[in-house]
Length: 395
Image 1 (tube, rainbow, N blue to C red):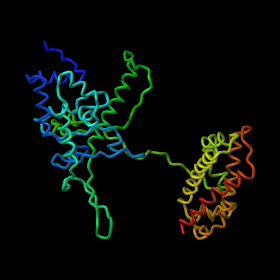
Image 2 (cartoon, one colour; image 1 turned 60 degrees about the horizontal axis):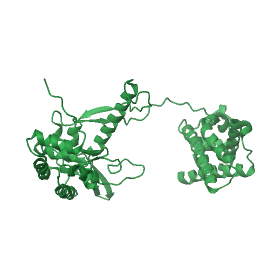
Image 3 (tube, rainbow, N blue to C red; image 1 turned 30 degrees about the horizontal axis):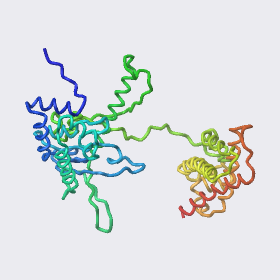
Image 4 (cartoon, rainbow, N blue to C red; image 1 turned 60 degrees about the vertical axis):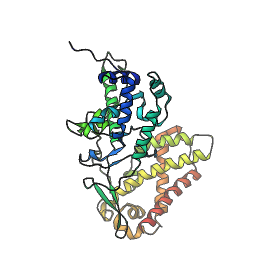
């Protein structure tokens, strides 16, 4: 009968179990693993994920950049490139100390929890700290040359001069994403399992995933983190959304009444109302109203651009003879020369302001705040500035 494998719940238990399997004391096993860390190379970007023959690696410690997904801003573990004979050292470095940190990260951040775990076995932390510091210094050395197997982009910087950009996959980021997706999937399963503590809780799901593998039957040949994930990771779908074609109604007498439905702006108008009804008139409120008006302007301009992208000269047909001249100039690229003059912008801006006031009062009804001439002029001036800027850009 096979023995039941004991679950290891802490770092010191992991060391005891690993040493016992090798027939060594925890101290001897730990010293051996620290010495063999000379064969481990730290990296965040490993070329082997592109081609197993690539030796190039990069260790990035980039900081978090707002609006961008970066290796340094995603709480990723550094990966380890190591031959099979040094797998024990790599496994020690990647072993968890706390739910958020492995041994490598705990050494780098001087986490006291690591010291406590090692003190339970009377193991010195100084040798480990020195070895990790040596590994970090070695990983900071930039590669002297790129690899011919890497995808490369020539980026022009001057006449006849280029930067050669080598596209390096971030194994740290890819494998962190794999871990998080696995956690999301595991939570989802628990939410549907009546025996689970999380049964009935809300859950998330990432759809249209593609699972890929690296390293075949020997994932360690790629990296230590890749081996821990059994050579598997995910690709997120990066396809553009499939949107049904939307028909744009060409205006016969008034663009604002015939081509735009005011209820499409209901969310923005309700948010606008929340500021309009305030008794205060602070700079923050005025700026919020200005920003919301910009949203409405952008939506209106998008519809106008879609009409322009259609048939040139459409407004010259008999069916559109009642359309105001200013709107023909604005919406039909056959009137491009007339559009470069700004005399038409005032009429369009006034029509937009009237439409906004109408839409707001129609949607809010009796709750609507009465908008006077001052508010009307502000709305008119805001879009007229945008229209004139557009003319300057086109000219």
